Length: 441
Image (cartoon, rainbow, N blue to C red; front, side, top):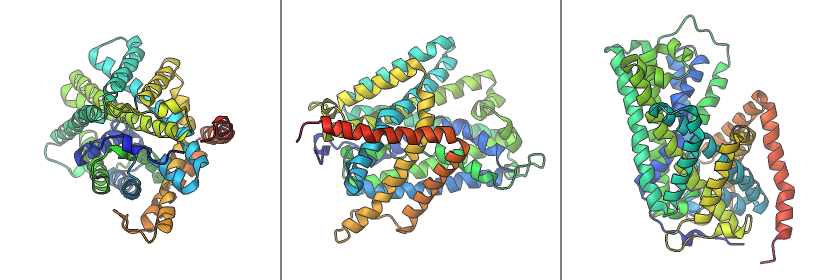
């Protein structure tokens, strides 16, 4: 088994590149839609903003845990590496089986289709263009990333700036609609009644919208001075996301009001159209297209490095574990991930795959953070480059939160949760059959 493949990569990512990856991996299309769902389940702007702040703090606890894990093991593969070292090759394989082979390409296919949808709306293209545009986007992203992490980082930094510009635009429009009166932000809507305990259901979409912060750990083998850069980039990026999310929700509240936000199907577009009309909807479509395109770039880059690490370990086809010596990029893994995502787009099966792997994704986060307890005990006498504050409170808080999310998902979507657990279970015999088929090393 190959224990470290990170030496084949070049460490070219700085702190701002890393922060851009965190921001780009978290901010996709969710913040332009999810606040309406949260508003439906809250009575006023105050609990709505409180939920987004609580979700941000809970996610920050997980990010700080990932910062210590990434500083301890600054190599490509992220959670796969931590599970392999702490719990063995079977849990690591099951994570890769669920995420790198299903969830990552499924999310890329889903978000690429969302990008294509908004791109076609902005360009006035007919609906039958959506699939060709989505496929073309994946071809382009994979093509750029074939030339190494530096080329991918330049593209990612550009689209992170564009999505932040869309956030700023929403804030400016929202404030312009208040005419200097911000008191309505926290006003209670007496006509909107919510049952007690509804805040739990409102917190779930908030936490899902904060997902995607782990991609930088997948690319840790290419981060310069990772013991210092990784923790700072993760914290800086996530804090930037929290600030953006809170400001966007303030803009929705002051521009649409709590009742208007709760009734909206597309709050970002509704907010823009209130000033700019149909042109505002087009502008917002361009902003969402840029945001979703940037997410696809990160997901493909991060997922390919997990696949490459699995291939180098013999847990996937060995050829996928190769790294191009000139560009220091996992070119075969990128091509495989991109090709599989394209198949999912053309067959239209990505929606079910994402629903079926949600529980597996959150289980991966829970067990990934749990490895921190193993590292602390196993290497208790060794100095750590970075230690998560308030240990063991923060990792326990995050693990309990994730388990709560899993429990709520099982209750709300028992069929999807059952299929997710079934997919994980199928990976067990696949693992043993794969190991038996591999030549002794």
